[in-house]
Image (tube, rainbow, N blue to C red; front, side, top):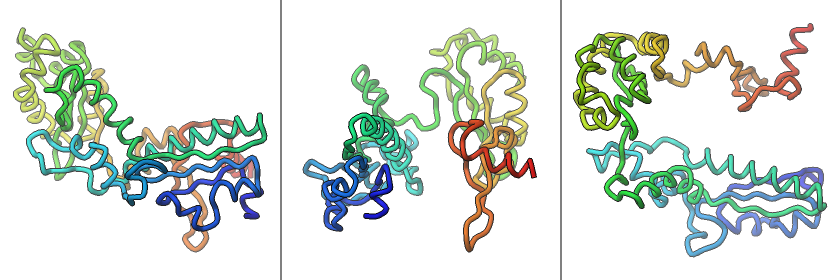
Length: 291
């Protein structure tokens, strides 16, 4: 409670009722600090018939329908999301944004507020939102699409030279299509009138993908990326987590810094989503340079 009295926000991530049972419900927090903002995040929200059910990420994703979308179209049982921590990504951002809004109100009124985040709702909004709109207009298009793009082709993940090496290629329009064909030596495809529109390319996605795969299989992922980017075609090599620390794009933008953790020493740490000359994350580097 001494910590609460000197704080602005309390975040919690438990089954609804846990904080109350610990004597840390919003009424108790506000008695110590009237301006406190309390944000709780749970699987299915604080109210409703399913609110008391516990749920980790995979269960939340299944209940909100995300699991069914995250699979290959021809493999109904091949769910691809077993090891991710989604919806933590969306719930945390929704909670942080709500907390900022509540802090602005608290500065004006002197009174805090309690906010509840339903992770299942965040999942449904972030992932199911576009799919739900599409299914209303055309129920036949509400099925999983895998890695294939919905609006043009080729658009997907393609195997490259080496073991388990991949690169993403995204054709956005006909200009991209002609650039891609010129780069991979597919003049015959560029001249095919049936492939002159996005609709035609989508209808003939499989033979197009075969030609693209035949080319990418002869090159390393970063070679594919550099070659296509130089031609004006969006492409990005797959990067595993250890490779992120030395990725030229991320290094140039200073995405990572180092943090001293007691007992563990120096650890690579991700910076915030934006850079600022006045933020705390920039000042340690400036002091070190001055020394």
